[in-house]
Length: 199
Image 1: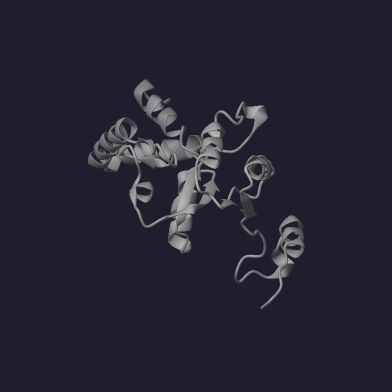
Image 2: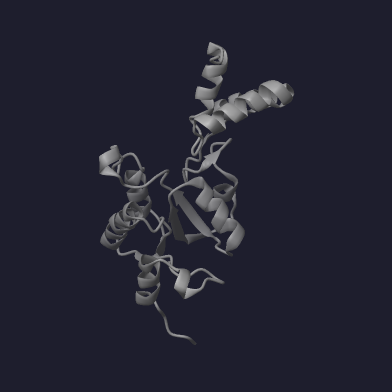
């Protein structure tokens, strides 16, 4: 027996989430309907609030509820260093794992001509304005080590170089605790070519 049309629509709604296929969507829908209707109502309420109340920071473009996010509003950040990342989760990861005190710029993706994502969609015109009208001394490119991420980093590096701004790229390679025999050849090659002197 097929599920009712409303249950089918609920399952289809869950499928908009990354990594959620038919079976996972079915489990989620039936879990909420059978065991946690109050949780489903709370989820619905919070989704509505988030979709209506969360926008982008006018400075760094990360997701926030105010005109300017808390990181950009703070006066303790270093205005001479800008870290460019692909998405807001990258900002959170860097804030938790590093002592970086500079500013951020969130691309909300990477260059992907096949998907129709070009410089305009990533806000690179705004980034270019920041390069031209600020006291920036260094741009740290922290895009993902994918073909698209590397192409995006190169594009931004060229933009910064035109303005005389130093550009650096985060290191990629062997993770802490990793063993060389289990590292894929691309990562190992990148780590080997990016080796540095020990002091």
